Length: 306
Ligand SMILES: Nc1ncnc2c1ncn2[C@@H]1O[C@H](COP(=O)(O)OP(=O)(O)OP(=O)(O)O)[C@@H](O)[C@H]1O
Ligand SMILES: [Mg+2]
Image (cartoon, rainbow, N blue to C red; front, side, top):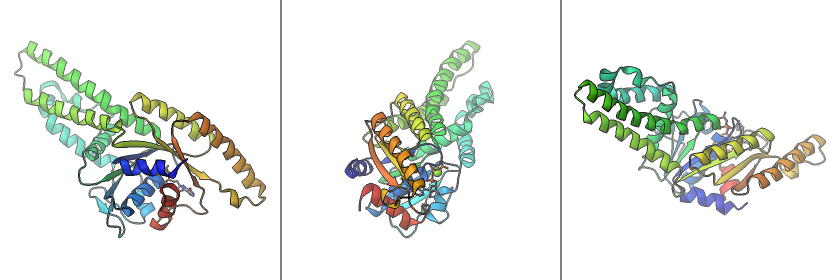
């Protein structure tokens, strides 16, 4: 339960993810980490890949969908909201450029896979993995299922690409088409970008995929599933943030709160025994919701120290 462990992850790794079930506090914890890092001298970018306005709400300012926006008066912190619809437009334009030769030769079905929107979101995400202008990039990811689907995309996508290259080459040679090696090279470059990002995600010297959960049944089950699924992609979860734990000093004989706390207590024990490999930190349930830089800093102090 050491504060040091969690802080070390933040300070040692460049790409920081906060996943978990809907509504458990992912955006809050991503903003907390980003703010803490900014305050501690790291040039930090927070990227939301979630199609909501949470990041703007939490920082009480507009955060752009197209340009990296400076947050508050902090010198080191900026943010960006990725809009999946816009991302898709950009992605298609680029892909169409790369594949136009292919599409003319073999038809445009190549561009309309059922998951183009997810691929587009992942594509944006990949470009942040190539970031060299910030010390830290914090991702406010979408809820677990969606995120995992995005993560699984590059695998399908690259093998799809590889097969396309292989099959089409044989076909085109058989039919006597002039085969443009440049098209294949472009696809190989795309594939390499995706593979690199996936390798980066599982590289524990640069990335950390942390999970946020509540001491409740459903988030615990979703966490167990996420850990297993991520492992399938070679990604280990180093830490868990257990959010909204009712502080003992507010109970004061209130039966309702005492029962809630007793329930949480049982789940906290379950979390300890079921997830022995992760560093765990608790965040208390605050008496208000968390927005504005001052409240975020309060959470930062709980999790990472002064
Ligand atoms: N420890 C806490 N005490 C009080 N309120 C909290 C705490 N943690 C989060 N909240 C509040 O809970 C709400 C949900 O938090 P948040 O938006 O961070 O969740 P999320 O996991 O990002 O949700 P979504 O899945 O919709 O993106 C917010 O209003 C936030 O201010
Ligand atoms: Mg959120």
